[in-house]
Image 1 (cartoon, rainbow, N blue to C red):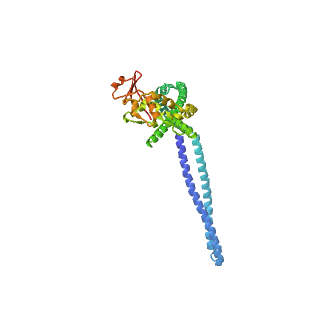
Image 2 (image 1 turned 90 degrees about the vertical axis):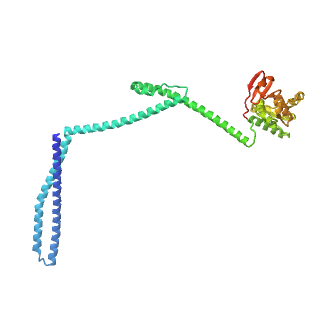
Image 3 (image 1 turned 30 degrees about the horizontal axis):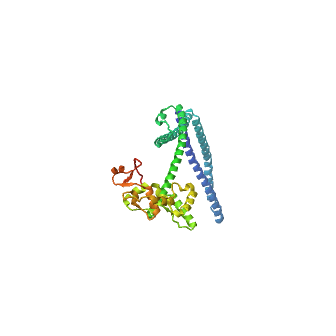
Length: 381
């Protein structure tokens, strides 16, 4: 270290010498400027001699000689300064070389490079640790979401326990976890597909309900699409044959004589409310359309009005306490179909009266029939 300090002092002294030499060089430049000025003055002297018949030639010559003498005296000094400047520069270069070759200096430089490399590796490890912490956080969140999703595939991976394991065991556990996540991905994809499928079905049902609600708000009755399909097809066939288009949905030609029993009447009639009824003379033509539509008619029926007209001749009209009496219609055949469907059902004001009759109902949709008591479903249309 003392030699290093000695080299530093030599370096400082060399820098001072360079400054002195720079001042000497500046003086030399001034001397050169003087010489230039002398030469200019000589020109003026020659010009003056020519103009003034050389009366002052001796005086100007003396000045020129003085200037030349001063210049000659400065030239050796300037050369000496140049040599000293070169010597100072050489000493500076040698001092720098000696400093770089010094073992302590080299060791210091080595440790500086090591420090830079270690700092670089440290920053790299810090970034890796930050990435690991973020991945660990996301993994815990993912496992929490998987647990909440109640999927069939399960994983017993515990992040906190995993972090405490040796690194040689972590690799195997990660492979097992990756396989489990792949299986979970497939299951979640299937579950997502089923959810979207159910959502599409729900959207379709919602759209259909909105359509029905719009019709109801406009005062239009909402009927099953199969009933409307069969009614439209039958009337189209009637029109083609030049017949009266009298195909109706059964509930279209009914009305309530006592509206207090409407909900009960709709529940008792059930889906039969949407059967298609035509005049007896048109039944055969309607039957051809019905059979031609095949399964498109669904659960909708075509009422056999000719047979109904024939058999109803032997039936007694419903009594005033019967449910069929509460329903009216301008269509005679439709009224007989009501009597057939609701034959013998007695309206009871209290549930305690139901067992007094073989077929009976109450306002709140209780029905006694076939030696059993049941609750009828409310109509959704």
